Length: 131
Image 1 (cartoon, rainbow, N blue to C red):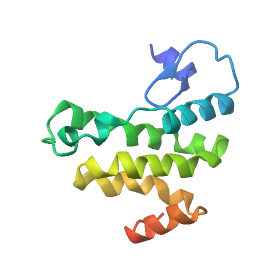
Image 2: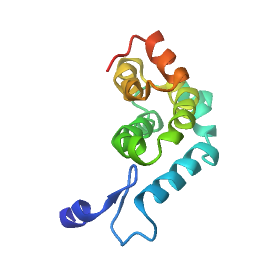
Image 3: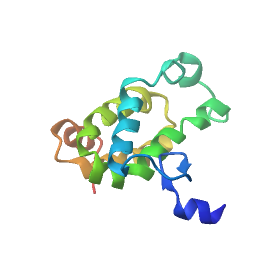
Image 4: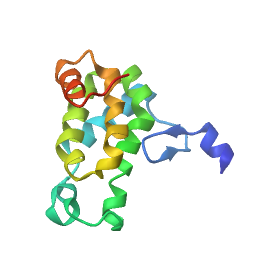
């Protein structure tokens, strides 16, 4: 399994271990487009998850979303920088409201490298997040 992981292509929370059918940049843009435009957020936005106890499984699964973004941020910056604003807005609107507060600053910090986008820069400044 280690060999497959080291030879594979990370795609967020999964690793592609078969030969890719399209270039990395094309595949990443397609995944990010699906994430922002087609992903159903009803579970993330529902009151049951937003106000759930931190130990609830669904609440802990929310950690996967910022984790996936953080793990892919270098690739996003390189191959799909035009996707950052849409991803940021998705993250701000659907993840931040229900995320455990003591971990939020660490997760939010992933956006400080996108300070060339005014909306992201101002949001980071309003939270005193720095590079």
